[in-house]
Length: 319
Image 1 (spheres, rainbow, N blue to C red):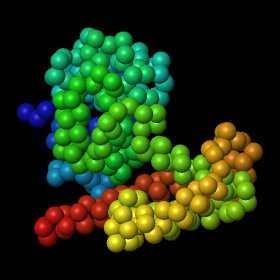
Image 2 (image 1 turned 180 degrees about the vertical axis):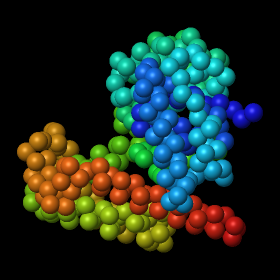
Image 3 (image 1 turned 90 degrees about the horizontal axis):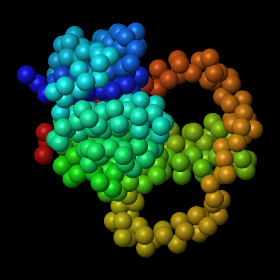
Image 4 (image 1 turned 30 degrees about the vertical axis):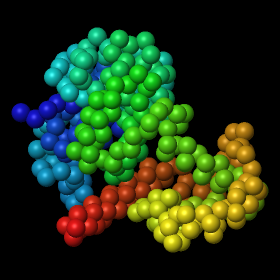
């Protein structure tokens, strides 16, 4: 019998995690406090798996039906966790709520299970410090939608055991995710720190009247985005010169001069500026059309994910 993974929280991220683990052949038990919510989550999982199978982007080597059969729903936490080798918490981003949930998990944990949080900004020290089994707690932060964007940030607390990091990374690789392991807890982790730096500069350029919202987004989607879909900023530096050392010798002074002209982060992402940006989106993406545009985004991410898997498999085969 395959190993079991438990999901605590049956919202969108919990549903995606269940699908990811099922695609890797794991039995998955998904927990929520409300029976109707659990039933709704299982129905949505089944619907998405069947749709992805029709679209040709279903992950794993088994059918949508076979994967759905690996997933069960529960409203009893102890029942959900019984026999699980790994737990993925997926409740809303609230210190108080996560603290409450992990204290409920604590007496149900063994000394070899991993209890991971899907938190996007809260580190283990913020919600697990009072736990007896806090050394078994780690953050495994996915990127939405995680079914098509494979990055997972593994973030330890000050007390997280080394084997927890190793087991989490191994499991993520086994189910087709792309894990990175932070060496220590830092606010915002890695992805959001980089993302916020980009947003900050975009926000300031918009407020200064340098670019329209459409052109700011075009800089990313038609400029940096295609390149960063396959290589990162450090490899970009390495390839854009005769190695990264040569890049720094050639361009470091110019880059530093440009950075000196940048403003500090905005005090806040102010509503008046947000209203101006939204007004520019009004004709192309009115608020009532956001769900359709979100689905459009996910469909294209699915196509890109499929392309990248195909290219990666060809690269491996050619080595």
